[in-house]
Image (cartoon, rainbow, N blue to C red):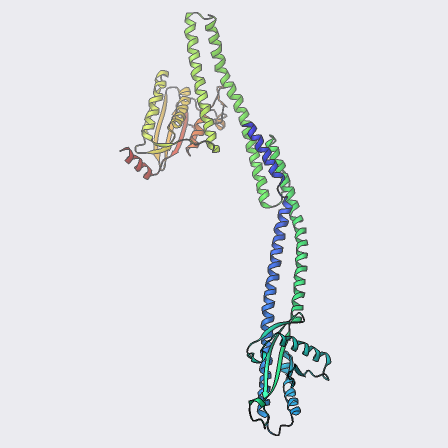
Length: 519
């Protein structure tokens, strides 16, 4: 078992070497929160911006289309035979459409017509005289968009499309403007003009890129700040936990000096306070254990020495015939005392194990009336032998407790033995029910308990007024507490000692069930 414990301890130490420091745990937590928050903000902003750009571009194009269509309709309605030549008509159309402030503010436009040769398109607006760069850009946009559209002329006016032009996303829509001269005889003589209305989103995405750069910079700054915050938070916690770890190591080596100094955080401070309480209790338990072993050794050695001395006397014929009987009586008496002491030591050890949770005391439902009568039958002979009277008053009919019968009997026997030792003529034993409890009251007419002894009467191997040590009363207290009861010792006003033991009774339903099972 010792080897296994050592191997387990070594294994625990080896595991500890691979654990991350406290600083790393805090840093990883803050870094994870920072990165997750930054990524969510980045994804959300890009999603929102893309939807916003698409919505804004389509809305602006629709406004421009509405403006163009109203001008085109007005233009068609105003055509007459005297409207002028073809060049004048195109000039009027151009002036009517491009002069619209609504149109120019909403989107860019390209006015063009089919080339009469059937090859390409003639751009009418922007004109070269207006802006060479604007016209070149308009021709580039028109040619790229037309190349990506197989049949733009059949395109619905309600359909807004998008395409890449020079690596820029462009939203666009075509408008067909047709008119016929006054002399036109059929539909083939209709003249066709077309408007390309488009919005270049490069400015929007430049703004989005700027936002993304700002977000990434914020993430980098947050990571650096997380590092600093982690260091600030981790070092006080590190020193506090290190202090508590050293304290626990000292306790394991038997040094119960309490930990002192400031400890970071409420939880660690509470842990330190609880560890101090634990160390104090361990120190008291260590002292009690050492005292227990010393007193137990003394109590065991005394009867053993007597047994050994009288046994050697019998072996070497030191005693005469009359003395031999007395020596044998002493050996029997000391053996009985030794047996009782060992049984009490085993019983109190069992109570300690039960209190620590490593042992469970087996309990059953016991009839208090029968239990009381049984203990009276056991101890009455001792009172008769000592010439003393045992007066009983048992009123516990139909009362039950959940207890270990042998432990309860041993507890009562120890109290009876103590009272019989100091009683002059009589010992009273009363059993009755008060509310939800059973009280066993044992009293004598002796000198009572010395006031100096009373505070430590139930301590293990407490020294009595006669100078003797004992464990019987300490065992009685341990048994009472094991059964969720109490034991009280006091002096009666008229003289003598009185012991009151209280044990809770079980619920009436359990009593009824037990009685039905007995029936």
